[in-house]
Amino acid sequence: MPKLEVRGLTKRFGGILALEDVSFDVEEGEIVGLIGPNGAGKTTVLNCISRFVPPDHGAIAYGQRQILRLARHDVVKAGIARTFQQAELFKTMTVLDNLLIGLHTEGQLGGIASRFSVPARWRTERRRHLRAAEVIEFLGLRDVQHQVASSLPFGLQKRVDVARALASTPRLILLDEPASGLSHEEVDELRQLIVSMRNDLKVTVLLVEHHMGLVMAASDRVVVLDFGRTIAEGTPQQVQADRKVIEAYLGEERPAV
Amino acid sequence: MGGIWQRARVSSLAWLGAALLLIIVPPWMAGGYRIFQFTFVVIYLIAILGLNIVTGYNGQFSLGHGAFYAVGAYVTGALMYHAGTPYWATIPLAGLTAGLVGFLFAIPALRLSGLYLALATLALAISVPQILKKWESVTGGVQGLVLTKPHSPIGALTSDQWLFYFTAVVALVLYIAAWVVLRSSVGRAFVAIRDNEVAAEAAGIPIARFKTLAFGMSAFYAGIAGSLSAFVVAYVAPDSFDFLLSLNLVVGMVVGGTGTIIGPALGAVFIEFLPSYSQDISRAAPGVVEGVVLVVFMYLMPTGVAGFLATAGRKALSLVRGRTVNHGAAGAVPPTLADQEPRAGPGEGG
Image (cartoon, rainbow over all chains, first blue to last red; front, top):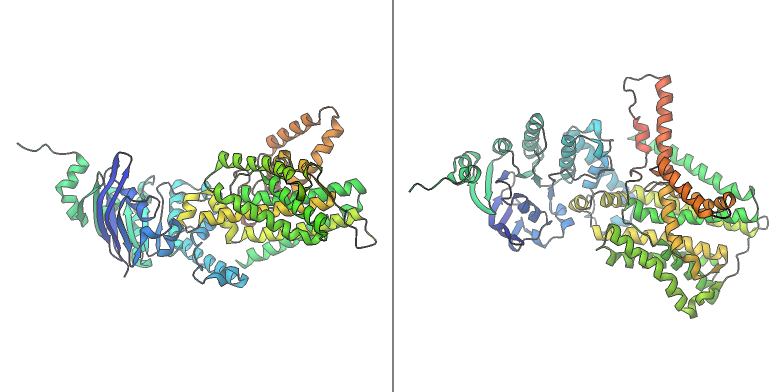
């Protein structure tokens, strides 16, 4: 049962302390929301886990693996996939090809022999196509699968980004503000999608998000960051009632003297 | 799924047929010098094909492919001149040496991108001819190396005709190889890196490995082109590989259609024949004619000739379909055509 354990994560950008001793866990099968006001360090946490940003201190373990020892391109092989705030698609490629790139690591476990054997490569390519078709079906992208990614509206591009991450059959998915730029209806679809990812695909979800409604409705547990520190952790109800969280979002109350 | 494969097979058979026709016919259309020019179209085609891999598909700008071309030419030249190696036997070694140089160059170049990478490759293009001049014992210095022109092993063919067929077959093999690689997961990874490096890495693509691979493969092609040029001209000299060669390859790639599979063939015709036709139009200032033609091409075909043909073909097809079968979805691109389109948006690479 792999469990994501983040311990004592600290990151300084120049003079700004982006993360200060952040620790939390994500259990297998959970949907955990990571929230906080702008600049609280949410995306930095996600970038540390996906190895885009090296933390100054701290450790990240996923099951038996020390994530911080992995190269950036090996994170996905460890079973952790991510999405991006701005979708970050391969813009000249079709939706299908975007997903096939998401499946790049598929079939690479067979060692050297499978790399140079042409039939093995064909079989791998065939498996990639089958898996891509599954994910396309799951996310309802069939009608647009042969369209060039950059020609799609932003909401669909974000869906393709999620599809590309899911294509790699991850056990843990890191969603970086999946609701930003989406319409009201799209956010509702997204909520159903996140829940269905966990329930039907058995993918653990770490959700970095601004949209409170989405986080509170979808998450089992919520971790709240403010100025790079963890200020609260608990169920959506607990967190919503937490004084420190309310202060962080609404501004500090003056101490009654 | 099956339909796509069948269509792909039919269209690739058609391409192969067209290619064979283009190989068989030209030497019988004209004599001596024309055949020599056709042979150079084929040689440039190979070099541009290589450049297109690294710049068009992988997005790493190279202004220095003349250097890899020169390396290939000199490996062949030196082997033929000093060791008496038969011309055909030098080709693989020339390609591999150039490929190795490209691969090694790509390692430090990984830290550079865009204009800085262009400048680094420019430095390579400028320095290689000078290094060749200095290393006199092997390269013959400024004088170069005079080689013996290969004879035709078939009595019915002149030496020029034979060399055309020989280079054309080499080109066909390399073309098919490039086509296979670029359509595989490797080619997809090249394009992914060009489109979005961050996302490519997050998807598990080791960027450094694929960038150096693209550079090495690309230089291998340029080296083979250089090798062929050495014995076709029967002479190698440093001044044949000046910066203008590198620049011409870039022009050919862009005019033909960056990041497309047929672009290099079209671009090669362009860079081989434009200078001589410009001479015909104006003996005094052929450069001006070349410049004007180039600007007109860029203006009329911003996605290269290949992109232009694809768009024109699509329009013609939808016109025909619109008249005969009036489907509900008017103007929609038929999926059959979308499947066969070059996957990389021409003109957007580099």
